[in-house]
Length: 313
Image (cartoon, rainbow, N blue to C red; front, side, top):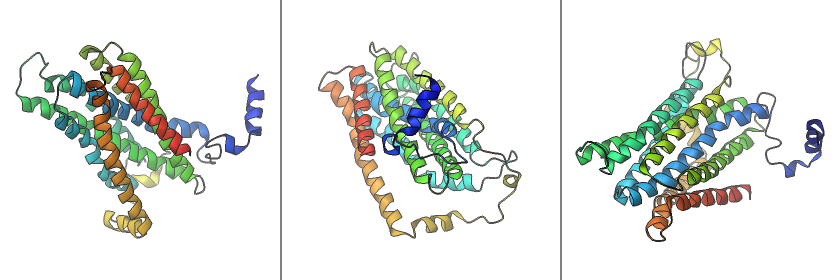
């Protein structure tokens, strides 16, 4: 089947058979939208690494206490509430280059990259396997800083990237654009889990270092592709906006609808519940069921695939 024939065949299919077939708009064609969604894809990869591989490795292979691992994994989530502030700041950001979202997208990516780059060495020091003996607090502090950097960078870049997508989407397609973004997050988590599982079949600390730092490089490259020529430059953004509502006023506008506040509370409670499960699932498989690192990482892929099914439903 030639390319033109296939394209004609696809256009004849009912829209209900093609998820997100009607997500595009004049200002945001499918090619740009899919490229921008790479931000969510890399978020899924990073999340799979942290809650699907590193939590199990830290508890089982490196012998780090489970309570300390839970604290480390909680650090990125502690940054999440500040996404509201990040989004507001990107709304009113003054840039000499005429950008508002790009500085936050790229800055967050660099912070995430640096956190992932130093994380494996911090974990080795934390577990007492470093070449130079150091006090326990040094390893704990280094690991905490690495996880905090990954969380801060992740939340910053994702907030600005999602805001940019909603800026460029039309009023009618905006909800479907957001849905596509979160679908890409789940797809990234499934993809990342399967890749990590194949790379860690024969687990060693050295391979773990390579996997984590390779993930850092992939995140940097894909996020760079995602933001390339996505936000048009504007002279109007080189100065302060004529009307600049305070963060307090913007928050009041958001929460004046009781449904929005109830939604935030429900999402918070759901995140709390699933995060507790995320910390324990893979270590349980390793310690109780004697599953390998590769096998427990596949559990994360299975979990995210189930999320995709539920989201589609």
